Picture 1 (cartoon, rainbow, N blue to C red):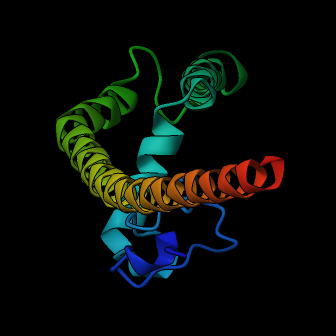
Picture 2: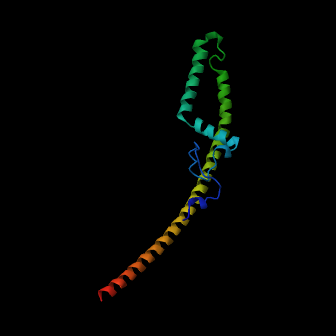
Picture 3: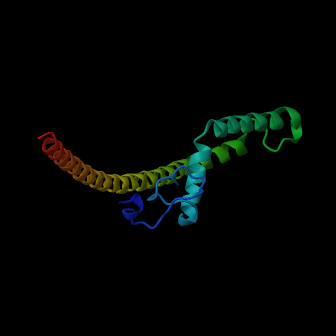
Length: 158
C-alpha cells in the first residue's frame, strides 16, 4: 500500500512542535527558522494583538499620569511630553519597516503552506489512483467469482 510518507520529499515527519504549522510537513518551524524569522514571528504575533494595543494605551496613560500628576514639578517629561513625542516619532519611523518584515515573514509562511498543500495533494492523488486500481481489480475478481459460482450452480441444477 502507498503511504503519504513516500511522497513527502522534504524529510520532515512532523512532531510535537507548538507551531500551528507543524502539521504541515513542508512548513519550517522551530530550529529550522533563522533568528530573524523567529523574531519576525514574535513581532507579528505580539504586536498584531489587542493585548499589545491595550498595553500601549495603558503605557501612554501611565506616562501622562506619572509626568503630570504624580511627579508634579519633578517630572522627567512634563506636559506637552516632548520626550514621549520623540519616542513615538522614532517608533513611527520604524513602524513601516517592522510591518514590512512581519508581512514578508507571513508571505513566506503562506508560500511554504502552499507548497506543503501541493505536496499533500499530489500524494493524495497518487493514493486515490492506487485505491481506484485496487478497487477495479477487486471488482473484477468479484465478477469472476460470481461468474464461476453461477456456472457451478447451473451445472448442479442440470
